[in-house]
Length: 260
Image (tube, rainbow, N blue to C red; front, top):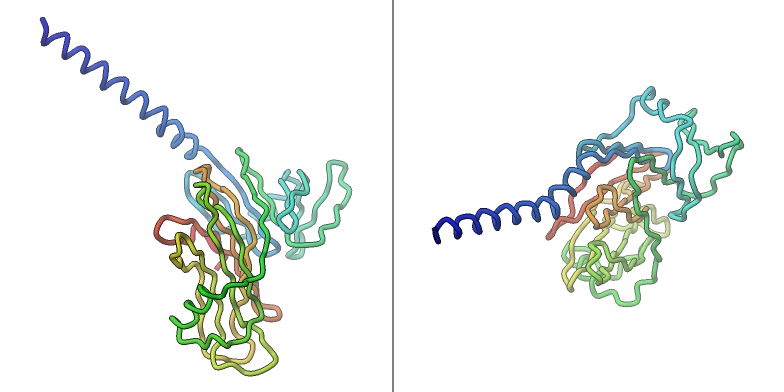
């Protein structure tokens, strides 16, 4: 009789354990599996997310199918509101509910989804301590006295653990004051005094080759309670901008989707 009671208690405990685990993880995973989103980045990229899969949309008919759909609009990472998008001649146009055109003066980011995508503002700062910048340059055999066309840092709590990481963007792409031996671009994160490389491009100088990177946005695109990094990279003249969405899976970053 005693053994039977022990078995019943054990079975109830196991049942409760699985119920708790399902509530903690199963419901959340099901919810994430049902999420769907379309993200528009500037004039160059349309990314879709469905069934936990990312796709790069380039087909003109697929892009046209987004016309007159409501999108949450951000300009230079600041929220503008919900408006309608219309695509024509390789450009996106924004309209309000009364079909009035809305002037967009800045970098466009927009999303249409069946869930809210948090998009966080961020602040660029001057790099006052070049400790980590110089270490990255030296590791890549680049002189620490090199001139830059872009150098700044951004503090941001990417993994939402209450501690800000520091992101650095460094490049000499499109420098015109002199002819460096190498054209380089680096984007990296410093977490717990460790450098985590995100984007690296080092090549011999061939006039205006290279790609100048910039942080577009921090946003949570998959409901995992952590932010992803949307990184852009501009090419010289008419070259198409590169857009890359990164996820941080300790100890490294991986690209979820790119327009390349």
